Amino acid sequence: MADVQRNYDPNNRDEVQTVLRREIRAARLKVTLDRHLNRPTSDAVKRLASLELPPFVRDGW
Image (tube, rainbow, N blue to C red):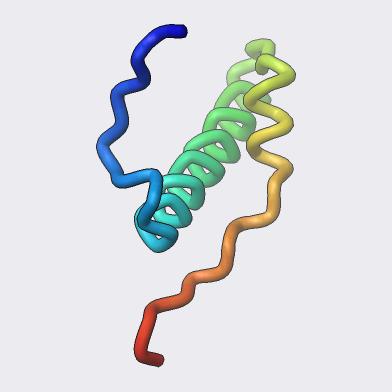
């Protein structure tokens, strides 16, 4: 198994949700740009773009 390099702590729920929200939004942007530029979009990017954004929750609120 290959080592995975992360810029977040996988045990920190807030960080994981922040990264996931960012990745989903980036995938949505890519789908939109690909559509406008008549480029194909991979199925993986389409699936990621279709995910619901995780809730934005902070401890102590």
